[in-house]
Image (tube, rainbow, N blue to C red):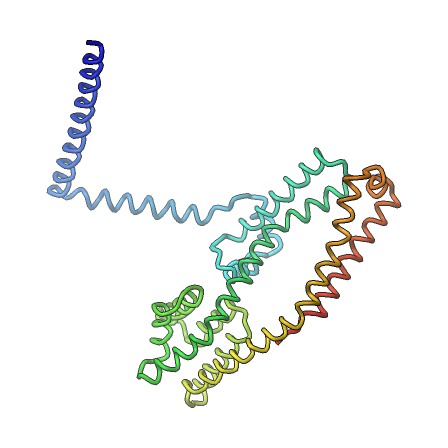
Length: 324
């Protein structure tokens, strides 16, 4: 009997909820039909669009931090950071990157000051290292994006040459790349085509393209196009030869990396050994390591050791890094 009563109560609640939902949906549909007949739906849509557009503009104009925006405005870092973020493929405002760096620096200093028995100068150094992590993230994204662009770029040049031989204009070939190639090649050429299509001269559009993609191959491509535009010539043949040169340069770069792999591994190992020894000494004999943090002479020795270690790592990387 109790089970039947519970079932009846559940059934009544479900029926009541269904009636309320159906009534609301029916009234909403009726109101939409009335708005269409009277003609007030367009006005509401226009007002909503105006409010959304205003909110979008305000959201883009806002900065995550007033302090970060002040730093960007005072030191005029906006254009440089904007170009750097565009090269990384990140649609961030410049103040956001500065804000992330300041937050990471403050959090690292606070954690090191409260949890680690380190001098104040070391806490600041820890904060500086952690504060550079957003810059390291952007640099990593920029490097991987440029690498992916350079891998597909020779095929892109050959595609432009084939499309021009088929009778398409150069600007149309740029637009066709958007449909045939993956990112980031598709997006960059699409943006260049849209800038030119909206009235920007092709020279200016290509120069902006070269700023967004700081690669020597792209600069060769831009120089070839601009030179052909002024003096004439077979641009398709020039692009084919340029694609061949880029591929040969990639092969040479791969051989050099394989030859210098031993040197790079040696540099990494030699740089990691002092860090590993310091961590082991800190875990096994903390009293011995406290000298480098609490004593003035020990702090000077620690700073000198870190500086020499960084200089040695930079010299070894310079030796094994061969630009092609």
